[in-house]
Length: 193
Image (cartoon, rainbow, N blue to C red; front, top):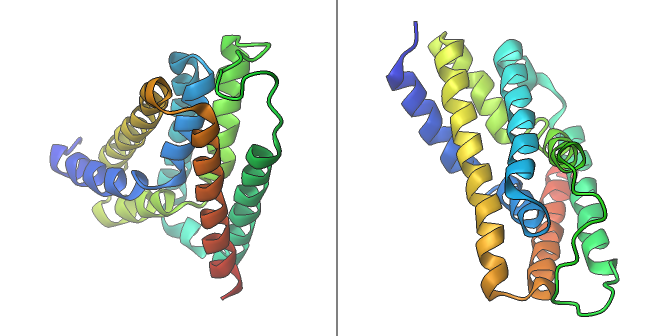
């Protein structure tokens, strides 16, 4: 039986936890370069997979070695920051050059893989597993979590499009790289502490 109360609680908890997370940053960066609907399709599919895993696994995900997960996430953030900082642009650094292949499968696949890797073992996935175990209502928790994650992704993707109208790409790239470096540092610190 679907419980709108459990869905609303799950939505609120997951939305607030994911809003300041790396998903909005990833969506923002992808949204500046690719067609928003293609990016959202890939990101939405990845989040559906994450929620399904969290619901199916229940509280088992909390048993994963937290330090190992944090170390991998930290290294991925560091690699992403270095890629952004070392990328050489051709021509005007503030112009957005369309990628060579903006097909649906390439763009949505890139969004899917980015979120699938970056969000594995994330706090919201663990929270979703815990909420499913607590309320013993996997459908309501799953729907609430998926809708919350999709809402955050949409905000990030659309925010990237809007931001490009007012802020130069070079600045967005440097800020994103800086945030990734901070997140890498925090993740690696948690892995070693």
